[in-house]
Amino acid sequence: MTETEGLIARASRCLADTYARFPVVLDRGEGCRVWDVAGKEYLDFVAGIAVCALGHCHPAVVRAVQTQAAKLLHVSNLYHIEPQIRLAELLCEHSFADRVFFCNSGAEANEAAIKLARKYAKEQGNSERIEIITMEGGFHGRTVAALTATAQAKYQKGFEPLLPGFQYVPFDDLGAVERAVGGQTAAILVEPIQGEGGICVPSEGYLQGLRKLCDGAGALLVFDEVQTGIGRTGRLFAYEHWGVEPDIMVLAKALGGGLPIGAMLAKEEVAASFTPGTHAATFGGNPLVTTAALATLTTILEENLAQRAAQMGGRLMYQLRSIQDAHHGVKAIRGEGLLVGMELDREVRPVLARCLDAGLLLSSAGEKVIRFAPPLIVSEKEVQRAVDILDTALSEVTG
Ligand SMILES: *Cc1c(COP(=O)(O)O)cnc(C)c1O
Image (cartoon, rainbow, N blue to C red; front, side):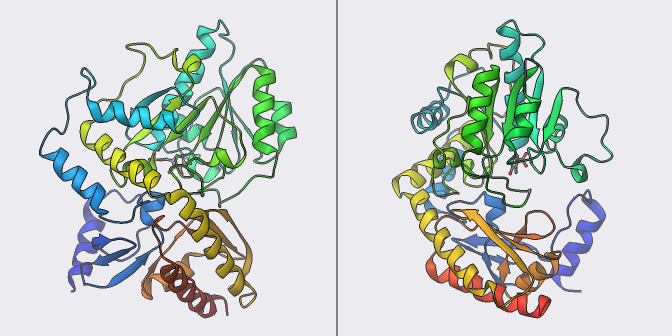
C-alpha cells in the first residue's frame, strides 16, 4: 500500500464522510502550484475554492502570520487589537461600508447579515418585516439560517424544518422579485454572480433593479460577495461592475489569504442596530486572522491584482472559447474576471478526474459546470497550460 492509499484508508475510517474527496493527499504549495505526498505537482485552478487569491505561501502572508504568531494569537473581543481596527478601516475605505463585524466563515457572515436585517427592521418599528428574499440556485452556506437562505433542494433535503421567514424567487428575474417584495420584506439577499449555482452572471439592469425595488419597499439589499469579493471578478467587489451599492455585504473566502475569516460590512444607519451584546463571535477577527487578511488585502490593492484578474480572466475566457468548437459537449462559457464557468451537457466529474491525473486541479460549480478560480497571480503560461490539459481531457471524455 502506498503512503497515499494508507492515508486515504485512514481518512475513510475517522473523518465524517461529508466530502467526495479526490484521491490525492496534498502536502505543500507555492504560487499556483501544489504537490501531493508522493511528490506529484499540480497546477491549482481551484485555489481552495476561490480562497487563495495570492496563491500558496505568498511571502507577504507567510511573513505576517509568522511574525504575528510569535507576538499574539488571540485575546477575545473584550479588548481592542490594532490589526482588526486597521482591517476594518481598509475595508470601509475601499467599499460602500462604514462598519465591519468579523466572524470566521461565509455562513457565519450571512447569519450576521440575516440577524442584522431583522434587528434593523425591529428598531425601525417594523416588527412585521421579517422576511428575507433569496434567489433559486444561490448559495449562502451550511448553517441553518444560511442553509434556509440557500434555495437549492439538494443542500436542504433532510434538514427540515428550516427557518421561517424566507421566500425564494428565480435568479435574474426582476418581475418575480417585484411580486414577492412588500411590507413584510426585511431584505433581499443575493450573490452578484452566483458561484456554486454555476457561475451565473445576471443580465444588465438586474442588480440596479433590485436596488430600486428595495428602496421602494423599504427593504435592505444584501450582497453575498463571499466568492466574488476581494478582486476575484476583476474589481475589488463585484457590485462595482454594476455601480450598485448594497446596505450590507458579506465576505469570507479570499479575505484571509487562506486563514479562516468572515466579515459583514454595513452602512452606518443599518450597522447601528448591532449594539453591545446583540451579536458576537469568540474568534471573530482575532489578531492572527486579521493580520493575515491585512497582508492579503494590502498586497491585492498595491499590486492591482483585481485589474490583473480582469486581464487574465479575459485571456482564460478567450482561450476556452478557442477550444469550445472542438468539443461538442460544451454548452456555454461565462463569468467575470477569474471566476469562470464552462457548462457541459453532462456531469463534469469525469473531466475533473482526467485533469487531476494530468496535473491540473479544477472544481465544479453544480454538476455540469467546470469552475475556474485560479489565484489572481496566475501567469499567461499557467492559463495556457491549464487550457491545454483541459482540451485533452475533454477529448478523452466527451470525444
Ligand atoms: C462559500 C460560500 C459561502 C459559505 O462560506 P463558508 O465559509 O463555507 O461558510 C457563502 N456564500 C457564498 C457565495 C459562497 O461562495
